[in-house]
Length: 199
Ligand SMILES: CC(C)(COP(=O)(O)OP(=O)(O)OC[C@H]1O[C@@H](n2cnc3c(N)ncnc32)[C@H](O)[C@@H]1OP(=O)(O)O)[C@@H](O)C(=O)NCCC(=O)NCCS
Image 1: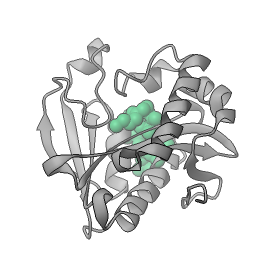
Image 2 (image 1 turned 135 degrees about the vertical axis):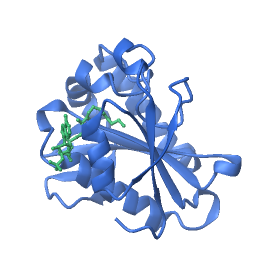
Image 3 (image 1 turned 180 degrees about the vertical axis):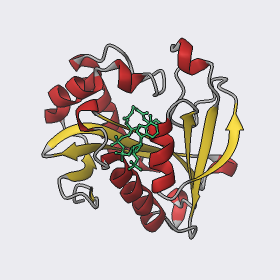
């Protein structure tokens, strides 16, 4: 099977599978409290090369063995992995829902990269996952209320605000961080994008 690569509206930014050669750049961009504080607990701080190696091994194994459970891609910017984007596919009654999460290395913030990446990823999921066990018709993202940049990204990428959810440790989307005293006091805000809703 050909390796997956999703083009975005920004030429220098492509979404593609993680590679072992990404370890150093992943650790360098991920090792930043300004990034980790808005992500799930499993995104560590400090973020070491060992964490990067473990993540790439996990993401690569998942891509090979359990495609039905999700998709985790590197955000490549100017030839270097400088962020990540992923989707966890739901099970049972939630099987048509994918919960997405993403981050960009701080050096690249403010250039529209996240917007282009989320838009391209959402369009890929809704266009390519239409039948079978990974059919998806609803995308969700959960964001802390004190993360206006991410809320803006989702709005620009065709997501609409849905409901407030407790920050009680339900790990079904990006944005929880129970280690962060500031963020943990904030409610998560859920955004959704439905098939056929348009961007
Ligand atoms: C959130 C994040 C992904 C944004 O990445 P990015 O590439 O800088 O995003 P973009 O440039 O595409 O868009 C950012 C938008 O937010 C806006 N923005 C940035 N800071 C803002 C703030 N404090 N208040 C309001 N809007 C803000 C920008 O102006 C821009 O909107 P515009 O294009 O209308 O001007 C990035 O900051 C990040 O990785 N943060 C840490 C991890 C994280 O929060 N992940 C998301 C978890 S749900």
